[in-house]
Length: 249
Image (tube, rainbow, N blue to C red; front, side, top):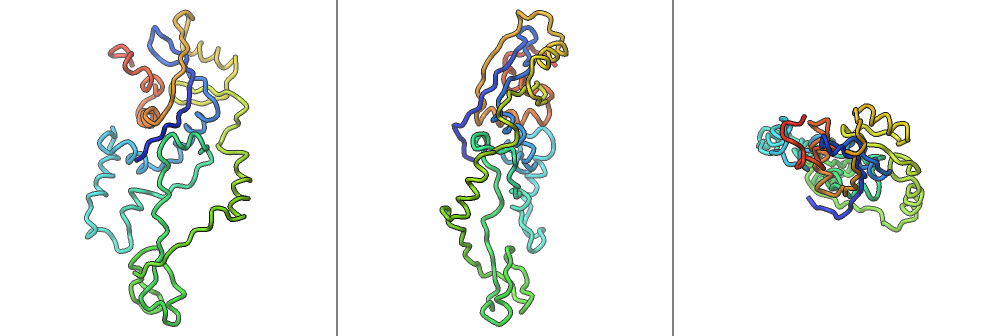
């Protein structure tokens, strides 16, 4: 798993007395990153965080598939299809936010197979992406690998496709600022909504409030993923966990 130096920023509003994050002021890139987490399959999350660090039982399921001998796997089935599931590209992935965490695997490289009798009449019409599939024509196993040729990067089709999507990357509009609450509730930011949040948090002494800008890089991104699986105070857990009083809920 490779890391990246790409970082995002959050401006936190902290209640220093209670040592909790009330909410964060963020831009489009942060919101796109948070929303893109919804597109991650469970197996991808387990792989990123490490199966031993999962608080629930999904890590055990992941490990069980890893250790399962292929003797017990159906012919044609592939353990990698479960451990490294294909991911449909998320509309919330932006050029910047998608670099924050390793890009989910889009599945195996494109491998196709024919049978050894592919030069025979009828056999050449069949191809499979699963090694060992029975040829519908002659009945032999399809194990002869074919070479996949991807389209050229500079082709006119790809250039047109890239230019048509470059204008609107991501999921949310970038002309406004957003509020992210401690439990990762995301809303467009406004003066009224900020006052409402302060009232909801029962803040009476504004002198205890402090603004702090934090960077969200690779490590913080993984911590956010991990905390969001079991916590309702994600931002506090990630950015203030070392400073929180013992026994604080």
